[in-house]
Length: 289
Image (cartoon, rainbow, N blue to C red; front, side, top):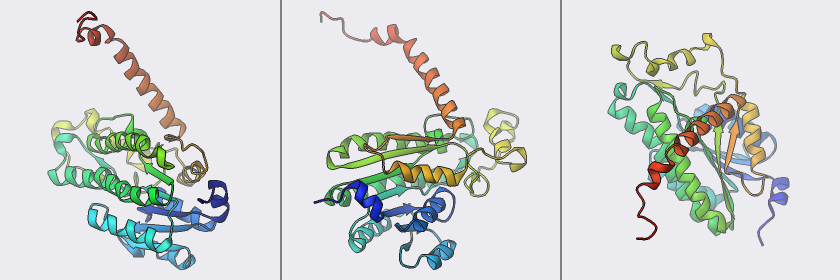
């Protein structure tokens, strides 16, 4: 008989989290380890989490992983479930930001962010599903962004990855619900992490785009213009708490600024759809045909 979620939470869960060297992944790992949960954390450079490994040698397992390597993703997932017996929560967190007008981006930059943010997340989730079904359930948490619902100039490829993974996860959530697997898409707003102030990649600028909306992101990336409002530690705490909710929330919005932006964007979208009622209906066969 499967252990109840309430009892499992009390005993401590086992988590598999990609990208734990910084940002939300690091915050999640730290908070979970401090409360006694087990964590398998993936990183590109194991030395980046040497301090966590030293403090939690019994409960923190480090795996070197590049999520663009599908065979390696499957190997890490398979090994984690096989050797730990059960993984309760799989957190797809690895990813980064890429800024610049679509025309400014190189082919390598386009392919790399799609391989990392979108395909890497898809393959991680696909690899985990077999094991989650076999153990009778579990939870998948996909770290997205409010940029998975709202789009800004100069962020086209980042938005492509986040809008894409949200559609994938919303569909998968319906597919796996009968097996007791919950899926949550996390949509944080701007936070004071290395994602914005350190790891963000910027395309080589073209003079043609100077002074246009495509370069508005330059102000956002400069800390001298004000820091992001989001507290990564508080956001990580809310993500952890969401795993106790039944049923799993499909979306978890973190940050008042993010929520306001998303509601405004969705209202504009709905207004645009409603204005097309007659146009949409004009393409249907008449009722009597």
